[in-house]
Image 1 (cartoon, rainbow, N blue to C red):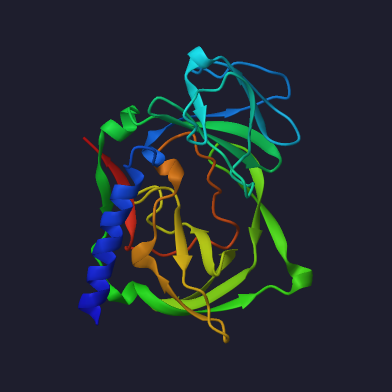
Image 2 (image 1 turned 90 degrees about the horizontal axis):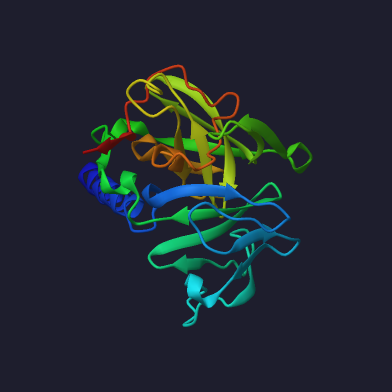
Length: 263
């Protein structure tokens, strides 16, 4: 069983490296440009960009070469792009460059993913600790009462503070230590932001975790072999949340991803 788990982890690690280095993966992000209600330029892009109550607006000429939603013809006039939080989210392209409108706490921005980004070109993999079965442990999820559902304000990688929605805690024992972590719901699964005694030394300053959906009794599995680097480890233009209070473990979690490698 351990051999199967180790093989699964190896495949997961390979998929992670392929995903972050894909043409429009995290390593390709070259900018996150916050937009205003008044039309303005975005550095390096043609056309005028602004926001309104519906999303991101673009005014461009056909000669600018921007297409939306896979259309055969480029934009010639004005068009609406809905952000990633909208069920009808849309994107645009300029040659090989992908343009993605995003919404964060009511603010709209345009992300630019360029396959020719220097960080993508210099990527040499993700360093990680060897797989170790003792870092995969049972955990029990206890949701907060509806009345206690909360958002915790935490610093983000861009220097701003933003609320992080949290829905409960997991309790677990690992390396002889009994601990709890605050987590969020991500669909039917759980997710968390953690740091430990390796953070900022052997590993990136914090990492993310994802847990399987808990059963009816709240039982799930915390596999720290799959602690992974946040998007901001790959590009400076992401706005990843830092760990909420209580999610900084006081022992070394020598498991999971460590650092981005460059050539």
